[in-house]
Image 1 (cartoon, rainbow, N blue to C red):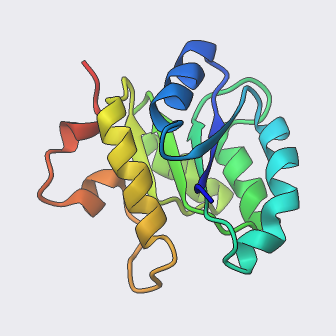
Image 2 (image 1 turned 45 degrees about the horizontal axis):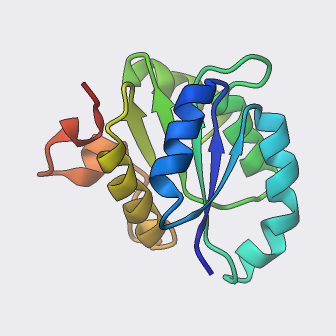
Image 3 (image 1 turned 180 degrees about the horizontal axis):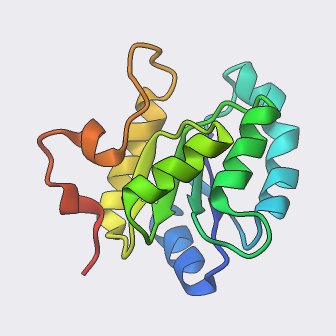
Length: 155
């Protein structure tokens, strides 16, 4: 069974592009609202906990209603432990502060515009390393180390 990508973005064009790029290797489930994504991921919690499903969340930072950080905080409150990638359009430090205010830990940051080949790499890397308790949760630039940080920046 393919790993599941929960793709959350209110921007239809970006959401559809992520879906198209990742669909070959993953079961991509796309949502325009975090609330809809929460409804879809909750029934998967037990299978995730038992290691029967690999699930990753790729979410935009800014969305109407519930923001990306609020969505991720809700996942954590509900005990849904999945790797998380947040797509950001603002300075990483601002996002870190907002996430910290919500008590959220994520696996990766990816700046907009997103380089889709870089996104494929980051999704695979996050899935491989998420449950490695010796790997700290870091920003994508910290985790990738010697890899050019522009790998995920489109242009």
